[in-house]
Image (cartoon, rainbow, N blue to C red; front, side, top):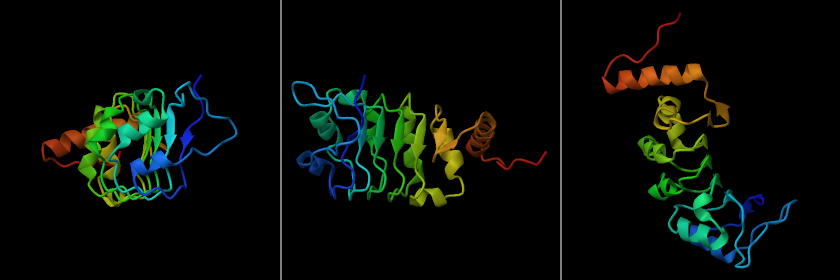
Length: 180
C-alpha cells in the first residue's frame, strides 16, 4: 500500500528545486519511507506556492519518492506556472494532474499531455487558457482518456460532440451543432 501524498503545499517555495530544502507536511496518516528516507507515495502536492516553471521536477521527485516514475497524482495548483512543460510527459503513470490557478496562456500546449496514456483527470481552470471559446473542446480532444476536466465529468455524448468538432476544425468546416 502506498502512503499519503508528499505535501509541500503553502511553503512559499519559489522554484521546484527550492522544495529540496523543505520537509513535507504531516497529515493524519504518516508518510512511510524506505531505508534511504524516500517516501513510498504515488502522490505529490506542491500547491499554493510561487513556482514559475518545472525546471528540476524529475530531480526533485527523485529526491523525495522511492519510485518517482510511478507518480500517479500531481498537484501544482495555485502557483505561477506559465506553460505546460514537456517534463510532465515523462511522468508516464500520471493519472491526475492539477494545474488550476496558474498563469498558463497557450492552449495548444495542452496537446503535449496527450502522450500520457493514463491521464484521466486534469484541472486547468483559473488559467488564461480557460477564456478561449474552444477551451473545453480542445482539452477533451487532446486528451483521449480524459474522464474529468476541471472536476466536471466528460460524458460520452460530450466526447462524441468534441470528436465531431475536432473533425470539422481539422477540415475548416462549420463546427456548430444544430439543435435537435
